[in-house]
Image (cartoon, rainbow, N blue to C red; front, side):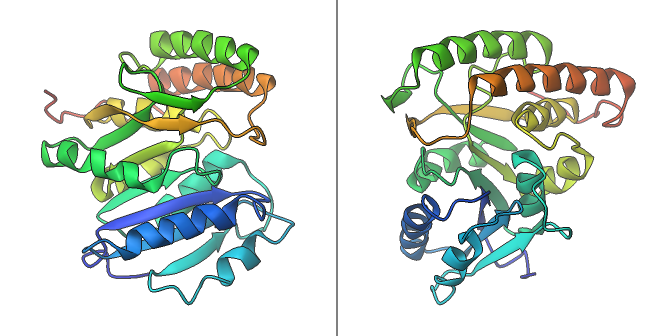
Length: 254
């Protein structure tokens, strides 16, 4: 692991059998980071892939940007949440971004995030639900309806005031990451809600920022995924009430 004082931004990409979509995303990320004047790294969190995902990463290991793969010790598939948790805790940047392997929101969106960290926010998330958000390729109608209904329930039960909890483009400070991620237990699709709910519970400030987002027809989210997320939202709500994530923080919120 690198010295976390020298790396400003870690980019974490969870991947499960992504040999087709990951190459373009990695090339885009590495090219962007190579143009920045701060130190960066890329961590691909392999979630038990059985295809050439790891080889795709290894083929780019000569990049000027530090790039590595981290894997579960048992090499099995655990779920996207478990992969993100693995990568975020292995990363060592002062700021840590996780993004999707399909590049549905491109890496250059981080430029919109920096001003809010300067204002003191601990978590900055991309949102498809704000007035200035742009969706270039929409989801199928049934997924859009399920997503809107699901977000309403999520806001009511776990994350009030957040228009879009599920966009896979979220950035946290190292201090926030190292505090909340060891407490997280949701391994699959509901992990986004858990991240935001636990961050709020622990007193961290979250800012929602509009993004451009393009639906990938090959995406792995199905209609059944939304029902799975809602079940995990109930689980997170119960966990908070039961004190699973610790007592509410005394951190001052504004």
